[in-house]
Image (cartoon, rainbow, N blue to C red; front, side):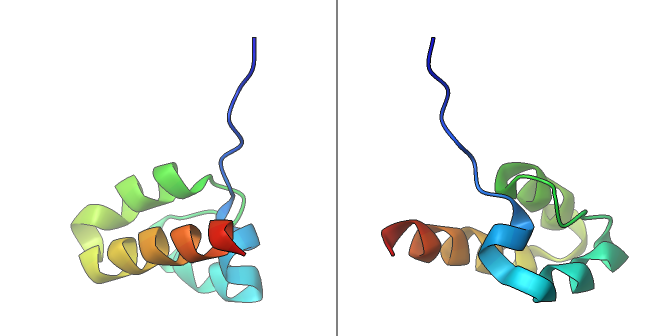
Length: 59
Protein backbone atom coordinates (compact mmCIF):
# COMPACT_ATOMS: atom_id res chain seq x y z
CA UNK A 1 0.00 0.00 0.00
CA UNK A 2 1.25 3.44 -0.91
CA UNK A 3 0.62 6.68 0.94
CA UNK A 4 0.81 10.25 -0.24
CA UNK A 5 3.28 12.53 1.45
CA UNK A 6 1.70 15.61 2.96
CA UNK A 7 4.07 18.50 3.45
CA UNK A 8 4.55 19.87 6.94
CA UNK A 9 4.10 23.52 7.80
CA UNK A 10 7.82 24.00 8.36
CA UNK A 11 8.58 22.56 4.92
CA UNK A 12 6.29 25.12 3.34
CA UNK A 13 7.00 28.21 5.44
CA UNK A 14 10.45 27.49 6.83
CA UNK A 15 11.34 29.29 10.07
CA UNK A 16 8.27 31.53 9.67
CA UNK A 17 6.11 28.55 10.62
CA UNK A 18 6.89 29.20 14.29
CA UNK A 19 4.70 32.34 14.16
CA UNK A 20 1.66 30.09 13.74
CA UNK A 21 2.17 28.62 17.22
CA UNK A 22 -0.04 31.42 18.59
CA UNK A 23 -2.92 29.79 16.67
CA UNK A 24 -2.18 26.30 17.99
CA UNK A 25 -0.30 25.14 14.89
CA UNK A 26 2.85 23.11 15.44
CA UNK A 27 5.52 23.56 12.72
CA UNK A 28 5.59 19.77 12.33
CA UNK A 29 1.83 19.55 11.66
CA UNK A 30 0.90 18.54 8.14
CA UNK A 31 -0.63 21.31 6.05
CA UNK A 32 -4.17 19.86 6.11
CA UNK A 33 -4.19 19.72 9.91
CA UNK A 34 -2.81 23.25 10.17
CA UNK A 35 -5.43 24.59 7.77
CA UNK A 36 -8.18 23.05 9.91
CA UNK A 37 -6.71 24.65 13.04
CA UNK A 38 -6.42 28.04 11.35
CA UNK A 39 -9.81 28.04 9.60
CA UNK A 40 -11.80 29.45 12.54
CA UNK A 41 -9.27 31.77 14.16
CA UNK A 42 -7.38 33.05 11.12
CA UNK A 43 -9.05 32.13 7.81
CA UNK A 44 -6.73 34.47 5.90
CA UNK A 45 -3.74 32.46 7.14
CA UNK A 46 -5.49 29.18 6.33
CA UNK A 47 -5.98 30.35 2.75
CA UNK A 48 -2.40 31.59 2.53
CA UNK A 49 -1.02 28.29 3.79
CA UNK A 50 -3.10 26.33 1.25
CA UNK A 51 -1.84 28.52 -1.60
CA UNK A 52 1.77 28.40 -0.38
CA UNK A 53 1.68 24.61 -0.16
CA UNK A 54 0.41 24.37 -3.73
CA UNK A 55 3.20 26.68 -4.91
CA UNK A 56 5.79 24.65 -2.97
CA UNK A 57 4.63 21.43 -4.67
CA UNK A 58 5.10 22.99 -8.12
CA UNK A 59 8.79 23.73 -7.52
